[in-house]
Image 1 (cartoon, rainbow, N blue to C red):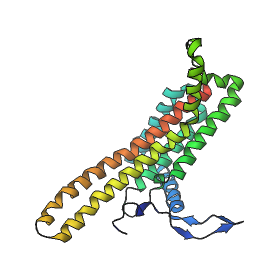
Image 2 (cartoon, one colour; image 1 turned 120 degrees about the horizontal axis):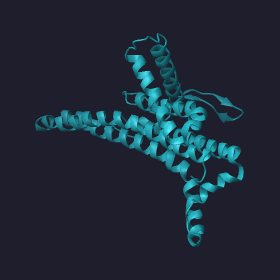
Image 3 (tube, rainbow, N blue to C red; image 1 turned 135 degrees about the horizontal axis):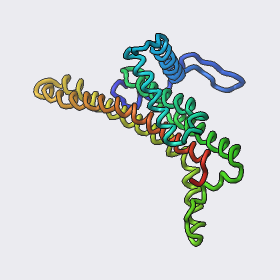
Length: 250
């Protein structure tokens, strides 16, 4: 089981709980999602509590993350979007980023490797776009399906494509994050498992173990970058979708 690259994604009940016939057990996924939220809260509380005139490293990191996401939301949605959605996008980014980073530690669980988690986040964004778009624009929200400047003779085809594209957003939004995290962790596990196998074989095979070891170290470094990039891409796409709610048809 230790060499099984899929075993690391198994959800294990830790505290069995059943409410009205529904399984509400606390699992390893529950614990590590809570750990991600707690770690984020503790970091920002520690980093910003001094609020020094000459900031330390923690404060610089916290303010840098704040400014980075603030500027991204402003560029994608404008000043109106920053006022309404910055806390939402910033929370999404931090949750995904911390979940990805925690999952990089050996024997820790990566919650974003579960499609149900990424799908829930994507559906939350999708629902927010629809609710805000209809509340703010009414029937004008449906202008997102009719781009300006499209010739009338191909408008029905374009509208159909836009409708399919819109309703497939939750699928692509969730699968992109899930698949990248899942594939990266599987690849790491596969290459890492070659090292003890070659060492156990002895002889010349032991010398060859340096190759999968080097690849594992390289992939590990790359996965840290992917952990950030996937959180960034998810947040960026969220901003783009929210812009449709604020400015349909633009």
